Structures are given as structure tokens and as C-alpha cells.
Image 1: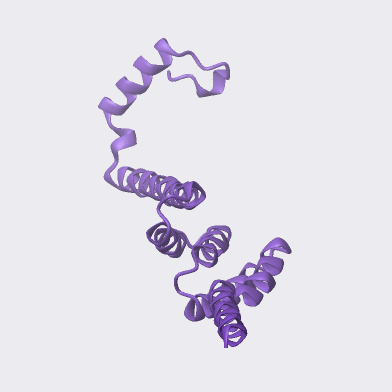
Image 2: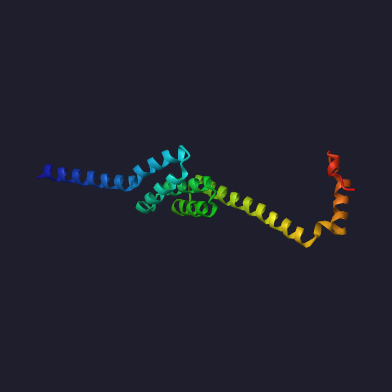
Length: 156
């Protein structure tokens, strides 16, 4: 009787370990294939595989991190931010998740600033700001403080 209980306990323990291992490995095979696609710079394929893996294992932060990295490489900043935020929400103690969230925000900000500057420049061209006396006076004052090494760029 005692041997039978030990056997049942061992089988139950083994079942628990196998179930826990299956739960942590859920989406693992797809993650490996997606990681290979990412490493060969096939980012659209990686995104497709990772989206399927995330649907199967939504609490796997590594899937969301690799998804964020893939979106980052594809210059899809909002999607990269969303994926990195999910990874951080799953495990806020993993610094690499925060690192990639910061990178995604920084890249989005740098592109936003560039486009904002371009739109302001375009607007100023249309408004005639560069032909105004105020602009020429400011340009002249700046050129006196920081002379350009190229004489063609000197204000006159």
C-alpha cells in the first residue's frame, strides 16, 4: 500500500512538472522560428509568426519583446511601443523590456520632431517668413556670432 502511494505521488508530481513545462514552452517553437526570421532580417515573417505565438501565449514577455524589436526594424513605431508596453506589463522587473520601450519611444520622437520641423519650415516658406526683414536681421546676427567656415553661407 505504501509503495502504491509513493508511485501515485511520483506520477502526480511528474504530471505537474510536465504541465508547468508545457505552459512555459507554449509558443516556444514558434518563437524559435520567429527568432531565426528576425536574425535573417525577415522582419515581416517574424511579425507574422510572433503575432500567432502571442495569441497562443499572451503572457510570454519574450514574444512581445521580439515583436517590438521586429516592429522597430520595420519603422512601425506605434506597434513597437504597444508590444514593448505589453512586455513591460507582463514582467516589469526585466530591464531589457524597458530598454526597448525607451528605444521605441525615442525613435518615434525623433521622427516626429523631424516631420514637425519639416512642416514648420514648409509653413514658413508659404508665409514668406524667410523673405522678411526680421528673418534676415536674425540670420545676420547669428552669422556674426558663429561665422560659417563656408563663405557661400555668410549672410550679407
